[in-house]
Length: 254
Image 1: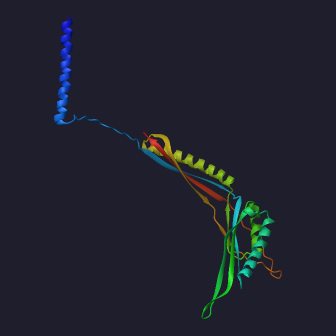
Image 2: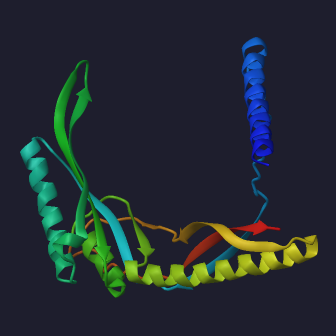
């Protein structure tokens, strides 16, 4: 029995040794044995997009008024004095309405020579121009501010832009956004049902917005003297501004 087990072991060992020896000789003569590995990569890129719109309107609570003063004189200093006097007078009137320094911003200040051409070019004087943007946080003072600007010596055409404070704008945007998302979801469900598509989870959201506020131009007038007829007070209706938001939703499909 013991000799029989030894014979079987020797036979198995000889077979294994012969197999690996043969494999070694084959790879030396024929090269490595090729192994085939199949790689499969699956991606799920089927998606479905739909868009919805939402809007919200309200009366604006802020106004930005653009105006300016331009004066010409024989010297730079005289032109600057004339411009500065008018600007200081206007700003004093505006501050009496509650405007603060942080709400008044100079957007342009320029000094330019004027020329005469009578055979040769020569400087005949200088023009100084200063442009200002005024932000009114109390929109009720818009008409009074325009009167203060025009009667104070502003002589440049400006415009009024009605808008929203940050907090008011954020509330309107949130309202419009909710409406846009709701519309986009309803449209997605309706279209998917009609087309026989099953919607999965939302995988992407895109938003775009528009703030529709039309600037109102006004023509600044020179300060009138006491002999001129009384100029009627300014009356500018504020109306309503509209904020629109568009939402695009992308769904997985299956």
